[in-house]
Length: 438
Image (cartoon, rainbow, N blue to C red; front, side):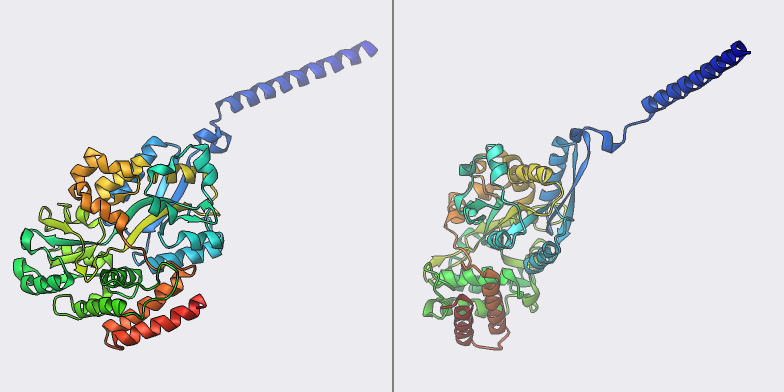
C-alpha cells in the first residue's frame, strides 16, 4: 500500500515536471520570437523627433538643410514648424509658449535682438558646455554676430546668418550709371522708372508697424548721422541729424513711388512685389537675391542687381540684422537638439542655407567657398562683405522690445500724417528716457 502511494506521487511529480518544462519551453520560444519594442532598443537606435521653429522661409534653404541633417542623423527626425513672418508676433508666440514651460518646440530661431532677453528670462539653455565638449571654434564666426548672443558671460545661441539692408533693382530697367547713390537719387529714379517694364511701383520698403519698420528707420537716421540711442546709451533721437533722416523716410513712404498700402508691407509682401515684377527698386535683406533669381517662382530671374543702400549726408547705413539658433530650456531632447543646432549653425548647414536660402554666412571662411560664390555672386563683392561688418546696430537697450515699440508707434504716426517728424522725435525722446530711467 505504501509502495503504491509512493509510485503515484512520483507519477504526479513527473507529470508536473513535464508540464512545467513545456511551459518553460513555450515561454522561451515566444520571448525569442517577439520583436523588440522601441523602448527595448539601445538609445542610439531610438528615433527622436525634434520640432524646429522659425519664421516663414520663401526659399528652399530650410528644407534642404533639414533633409541633409536627417540624412546624416538617421536617428533624428526634424519637423519644421512655421512661425508668423512678423517678428513681433513670432517673439510673442515664443514668450507665450515658454512662460507655460512648454516642451513642444526644441530648437528656435531668434532675432539678433532676442538672446539677452530670452537668457535673462530663462527660456533658453546656455550652450557653453556643448561648445566645449565638441571643440567648436568660435573664432571662425563673425564676432559681432556672435557677441549678440552673449549675456552674463555665457553663449546662449549660435548665429546662423547675418543680415544687412541692401538695395535690389531691375537690371533690365536700371543702367549701371543709374543705380541711386543717394536717397534723393533714389526718389528721382523711382519716379522716372515707375511704370517701365509693366511695373506698378518705383520703390518698396518695409513700413508696417513692426520690427522691420525700425530697421528701415535706423538706416535713414544713420545715413544722416543720427541715432536713436548713442554709443553711451543716451537717448539721442531728438537731434537735427535724426530728424532729417526720419523726414527723408517719411517723404519716401508717402510718395507716389511706393504702393498705396505700403504701411502693410513686411519682407514677405516686399519680396512678392519684386519677384512678380511690380517694382523697380526694393530694400530688403541678402536672401532676396536667391528668391528673386529662383526661376520657379520669380518673373525677374536673371534681371536682379544689388547695391548698397543709398546714402544720406553721412553716407550709406545698413541695419545689422540676422538670426540665431537656440535650444528651448524645456526641451525633452537637449542632446539631439544640440546636434541639430550644431549642424544648422555650422559650416555645412550655413553653406546649404547660403546656396539655397541666399543668407550671408556668419562663418567667415565660407565667403571663399566656390559653390556659395557661384550661387551668390554678390558675396564675392568686397564692398558687400565689408558692409556686413560695418553695418550699424539697432538701439542697444536692456529692454529693447519697449524701445522698439516706441519707435514703431511714433514713426508710423509720422508716416500716417498723425504727427510731424519733430513731434515724433520729441515723443520718442520723452518715452525712451522714461523707459531707460534717464
